[in-house]
Length: 363
Image 1 (cartoon, rainbow, N blue to C red):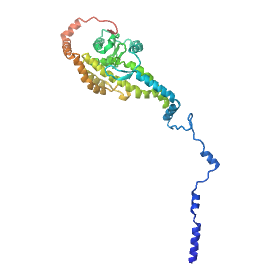
Image 2 (image 1 turned 60 degrees about the horizontal axis):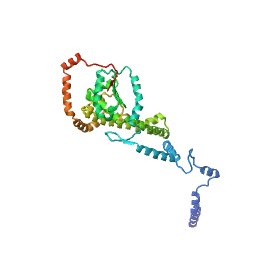
Image 3 (image 1 turned 30 degrees about the vertical axis):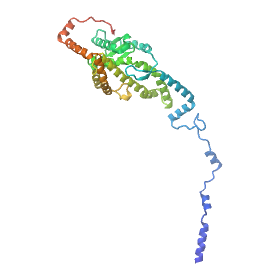
């Protein structure tokens, strides 16, 4: 019995696989010639991709890599030349001292924008109030009082037009001194101080030559739109919207805030109450029904403008005091009270001043 058991154990040990046998069982199977051919094929390369280059599979990054690797010398030369040209044409905006790119002179700005003046007159033909209308005279009176504080703009040929459109709450001043005010904004202005806040803002755009700045930047905006269209593989209209969102609209809001600042100082120096600007934008906020979000608009929101203008009021009030306005405003208030008395109104009605029949106001 013992011998039988010993024989069985010896047979079992002999049947066990040795380490050399185990390693042979675990070794990789030998591939056929057909399989070796399949696995050794070269990796697929995209069109234009050279050996050893690694491109992203994400479309926009791939197209940006392709442009950089194939046009690198052109990009470097154009970037260096464009950057030098950009920095050589930087200038400071009057009053705010903001640095901006501009290659268009004030004379060229007026010449370029003058063509639109006749088009606007044609567009609103029949709606422009005559020069003897009280609205036209009020606007002309405010403009004439603001101009001495506007610097070199007094040399322009100024013309005032009031467009009878109660639904339009807008006003603008073209380079060269062409003023357009829609009658719909006058109730929001409420008085001449509020109107001075609007017109001071619009005149400030000309003081800062914002139209020339926008024209100067248009080349960069166009290049950015073309690159965006190619890199993101989108239509030209959609790429333009992207560029506007991230480039044009922020610059437009900067210009609007800058015009608020300069216009506030102009109206204060012209002896208009600068606090009226806060009330104006408060009434404007109440009148706005469907204003877009600020990041989608060319203008800051009315509430943000109110807060920003409040921060500038100490500077504006200092201008107001420096110009001796606190004394003259007292006389003006007394004159206004006397003018608004029933006796004065009856005398004015009995002997009205002579009127002109022109459809605008020159000075």
